[in-house]
Image (tube, rainbow, N blue to C red; front, side):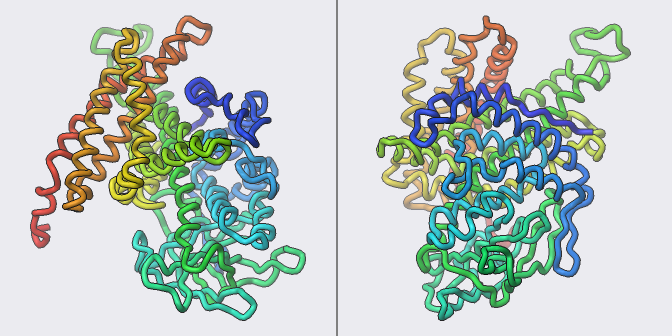
Length: 594
């Protein structure tokens, strides 16, 4: 049976020692968020995730959601768990106090998100989608819409969705057909069908607020003609409570590989009443605010599942007795040694650990940058932070979900046959993690976004938000004897990244297929280099602490950093070779030969 314990010690290391989380209280609006307030929040979140959400993870997967007469029922225990979750204020922690939120820093909320994803990803989809809808409405909605809907979304009595995909269009939203007909009272009649709508219908909240992309009658073709609308399941009455049923219904729920306790719905809009969010034909701007929030959150999903899988594989490797150590018996009092003595098992465990702890640091870097972007008094500092967030968002979404899936597969492999059956819970992590590489823009789309949009944006300005601090760090510590084993591998990977960036910039302008062919390899090269930078910094912090009372923690951190540099970072050499080889071999291949 799977178990989960929130990794609070490592979370505190990343937040305070690596990212300087104590500085958050110096930002306007965050003055009260010191360790004395943040640490109890993390501890309480851990309790909720360990004691309320995780116990219904496997049962929710086995039971799934059901649809009967248009009503979707979540698995047993989900209504009670959501009530506990909502009453504990967990739906509001990262929301604006003006609408009842607690206004906690994104850096803290991201750690809470990770715990939720580790404990029960399916459950986390419901409040997660609501927060994404909150972001769009908060940023682009009229004061009237915000006053009417945000307080109830913040307190969790109402939930939210994002309705983009249609049966004939996914990534290419310019093809969507859902219509929005203007009415005399300023509302619109929304008609169309949306698919793959997470949390589109369920029994956890009193109302569901759908954010729907649709076209007005005079809309230009393509994405420039898309508008965003708020379409509630129930139309609010004069008192702001759920009233008349709107023309919104669930036509089906998908039968999926994973996240089975999350209702993935086909939603039908039949002359449903809706209201415009933002300007006409500018819906993509508002929706991307939501999607970028969700893309960072999806990266955290990969991290959360990798952490849960790592915990399960370590526990099993300590207990499972099989064979003897190649270098001699390690436990003569037992009939066999635990499998944790075997090199290949250690390879898998350390790979999981290095990816998990590296990705946690990367997610925290982005989250703190969001806090700086939104709260720092200096406009130039805010701009620099925003540049970094824009650049790193596709990297976080793709890299952390790719590594999450690799890590959950390794976790299942550590358990062997026992990992393949349900009893230990490891195969569920694999199934649940697989969707993270697909939704909110497939990882291939993230790679194209990185090389096609983020790399050339503002004459390369976004790249400088990453390249400059890494270059400065390397120059500062390259000759440091204690740091040499960490900084020198980082420097080699960084040179490869710089050269690959130049190659794509040179060839991609004249031959776009060349940039496309290199995109996925480039994103991974970028991501692995970013992790190397963070691992060097984590090693640096830890080297100064090994003699202290918590020396074992820091020695393990240094050991994991060594493993990352020795065994995982060398991937960048192969990635660099593939990028420099160009796309001719794939693009010249005859289409009819496939």
